[in-house]
Image 1: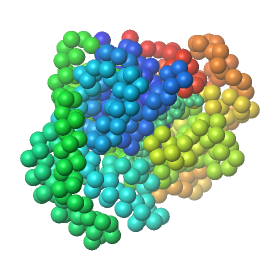
Image 2 (image 1 turned 135 degrees about the vertical axis):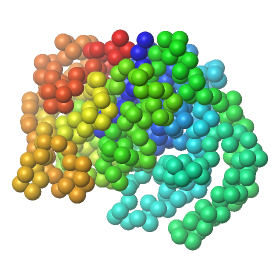
Image 3 (image 1 turned 120 degrees about the vertical axis):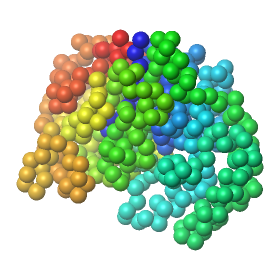
Image 4 (image 1 turned 90 degrees about the horizontal axis):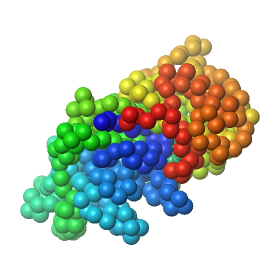
Length: 430
Ligand code: GDP
Ligand code: IMO
Ligand code: MG
């Protein structure tokens, strides 16, 4: 028996969806524990591409239970669309495959409106959010004025809460942000109807998962976003509003830390970032554009071009430490196929001083220049490789170098978006 957490080890979009899809084979339950539909997790099976924003990436495996844990924030309209799309493709045949925890917080229309208006009013100080209402929903959760999934299923309680909350939200929208106010009755009617369609998925994440643990079944925890977007440990304020690191898996699902056996960090063989904020190894030249095109680096949620740069070992060491990573999954190795040489950032230069650690202080980080080691590329296709040993020697050397500079073993290598383009070195469930 083993319970494994998957986390993004960079700024998101590392290929978590693909790795979760691969690891679902070994699990009974797959759980999302934080974030919302700011996430976009891509799975490619054969020639069919599926992008999931809320439903755990285990859903393409019949019979595997997918749980939306209490730590997630849920847009009911988006999940209904996602359910519909999956059913049309022939997945989610049995509704008991999907469970939504009663304590999940609901993203309300005012959360989205506030998120979008604040961003457009912030000028150069904007965060570059996905505009999905994530930050304002978590604010209300922590401020104890949130509406939870269980409330959505009880029309009278839901209507009472909306009536209590909406005057303040409309004041903020109209008087402070210059937006239109929302109509109370229309909102209540629309959301009560969503609740009626979603009620059949109600369940308790903590109870179900702890029952699985008693029965010695395996759990796979699916992180969203990435460690450097964590609200405590990331590049604050250019972060998301949840605990994206491994610790968030316990609070966001109701499972105790003693039941966690392994934590796998997903990292690209280079780095990308969407949205604003410091990114020391960013390439704004032709090489950045080459990575963007080769890796098709455009957001799965918003379609925005992703900023691209070289692998940053200091940033990865942050993720190894804050998550207690037991292994790394390195994705998108194939994107580097036709490079003569590849750079790895091993330290930073700050006002003439050499820094080994990724700076915590944003004012320092902003001014840091990467110090690179340049190593040979493999400069050929990887498509025939089926094991670590059958990768070209220089690709093996690159992976060994990543292990050395991050202090963490590589347990999986991804050489293309498809399930079949995956090399498993160590199985974290064993
Ligand atoms: P996530 O948010 O971490 O699940 O990642 P996204 O789905 O947002 O972005 C990762 C993108 O890379 C998706 O389009 C995947 O299909 C794709 N991908 C994953 N692994 C590989 C790989 O090894 N090679 C290539 N070329 N693409 C990959
Ligand atoms: P997955 O799970 C990449 C980024 C946004 C923005 C910041 C805050 O697909 O890896 P938010 O809407 O969360 O308030 O935006 O976080 N961001 C992501 N970047 N991948 C994601 O998810 C992200 N989710 C949020 O671009 O910079
Ligand atoms: Mg993504």
